[in-house]
Image 1 (cartoon, rainbow, N blue to C red):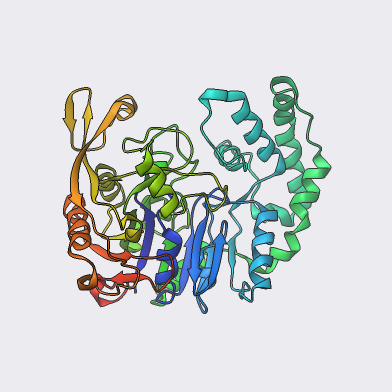
Image 2 (cartoon, rainbow, N blue to C red):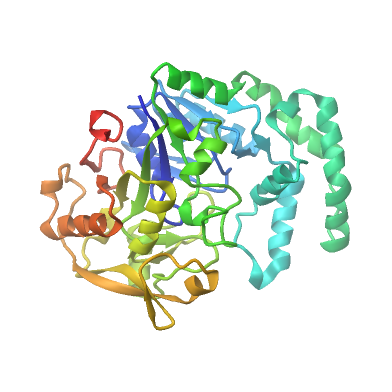
Length: 432
């Protein structure tokens, strides 16, 4: 049985939560391997809408084991709030497993994240201010706090004192903010430690044993390819590896164990935060996509920047991740448009460029080269087979498939779990 990686093929918010949930009934484990509560997944089941931030979407699938792996950074207060919220709605959260090697977000990193963004002004990155970046920086600087440290109070205190020795100097002397007290950090970090203790485990070992038993494991990326710290539109990126390679380092499974890589590609493009965005629309078309697609952040509520589909980005994501199956989401949002432009290349200072520019400056100056496709007016939310789609909707999907050189296996035609067209089984025999 396979190890499957599911990644965003744009700048995030492509509908990974729905795709993960759709696959959840077919898999045994769903693993979050990067990011923190700076990204959200929205899952709609019947008349119930669930907004997930730290938890893997598999938490909503009975019998599926949700895992927060070592590559994630955890805000313990947010985690407990999310667990309590699901419990109140009748969701069983007792199956959750948390890596003992995952790093936790201390309160001083949330403070630093916010004041740094304000200090940068026009040069800000556009972070969510939740302490994600500073916590990953601590990890790389080897001064981070891990889940396992919560169960040795002496080590925990030493680490907090060591971190604050330098961070308080920055807060006081650079940002003119008050110092953070050791005791308030200790209190916050230890407040929920016993609550999560039964969930803490060597998740890398458990996942490898699950694969050895022939179970199916789905690795769910937070954020997306163009936000990957190495392969995204740096520096306007997240602080972790949101591509398929990150699934290995972020969970402790080997690359040789990955069977499929599923890319999620929205039928148009959105982006949150700062940074270049070649197909961004600043007119009524952008407003139409934002309103029709309800493009407001699950975690932040921020309006998303909207633009037409960009298959240069899609081809890049396919190459970086080794995508074997593409899921096209939110096709229904395009209903009612007479013409639908698709970006097939860029014009960079008078030169046509068919692939992602290697230079940040070139990408910043890239202007979209569009191919226009005919739209459709028919409601497609009730379609359950490809043949039921209007001919122009079929042609739109097939053209995306052709331009990105990757088969489309699922088409989302509405927000609900059932509002999907499955062309290929991405888990079973048809996945081969």
